[in-house]
Image 1 (cartoon, rainbow, N blue to C red):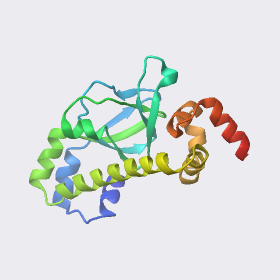
Image 2: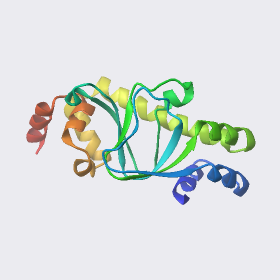
Image 3: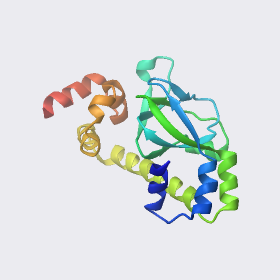
Length: 190
């Protein structure tokens, strides 16, 4: 749990009393590689801090080759179908473990209690929301002003270990090209 406290304290000091209440609401969860821990069509009830592993966010399709991967989350990041979490409506996307993962999760109901009873609660919520928004904003910006090759290079500049953890079909979907086009990009830059 020290990772999540360190993450929060990068932005603001948290009192021991606030930390004790917040951390008492966190539940450790683990999922095996390939496990879908949020299915499309269900309501997201957790915001989770990824302690270990890698997950992908995607829109499922009947033909799994046509699934649209639109995000990845890594160790020491928050992960959630945040629009579903906030609105309490069903999620249009799914979240899948790409490796074995460990999460610290808080439910919607428990987070509301933390907001009500602590000084730091609203700050934690705001910081989580801001970071999730910034990730989506960067993703949208890259789709608008970068070529597929630039998006590919950018991914590996930021997270070089991805090539080993994430299947190429998910990377090609994420950058918006076919697996064949990704092969041509990889051949051209190597």
